[in-house]
Image 1 (cartoon, rainbow, N blue to C red):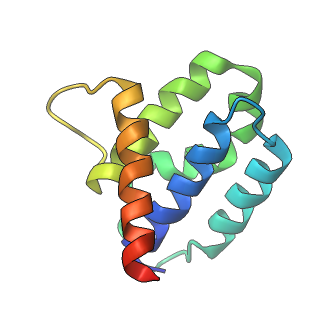
Image 2 (cartoon, rainbow, N blue to C red; image 1 turned 90 degrees about the vertical axis):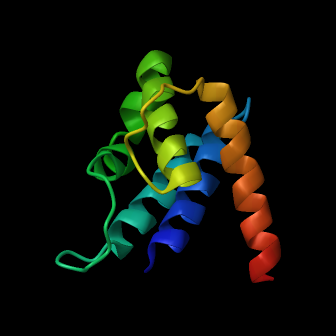
Amino acid sequence: MDTLTLRLRLGDILREEERADADWGAVERMCRDLYLNLEPGSELDYPHVVEHFLSDVDIRARDPDYGKSQRIEIARFVVTGKLADSKPVPGWILIALAVAVTGSLLCLLV
């Protein structure tokens, strides 16, 4: 798996979680499948928070504040390919950008 594919799949998870009627069972399956595809020892470079995001589905489902903070970090990675940013960006902007970038990338891939 390459970084672009990882970012696209994380974007899919973000979109499902942001739905008003999020299917947390589907989110859990998507996270588990993605986690199993991250090969230990591979050269794929991704922030450590990705592993936490993929394993903390139950916590995000119960704690909206924790979920929001994790989604902001993951959205930053989905949009920029990096975890750290010099300026904090509001979460709603990151989610909107993630959706736009993911949609554009999917159009290019099809």
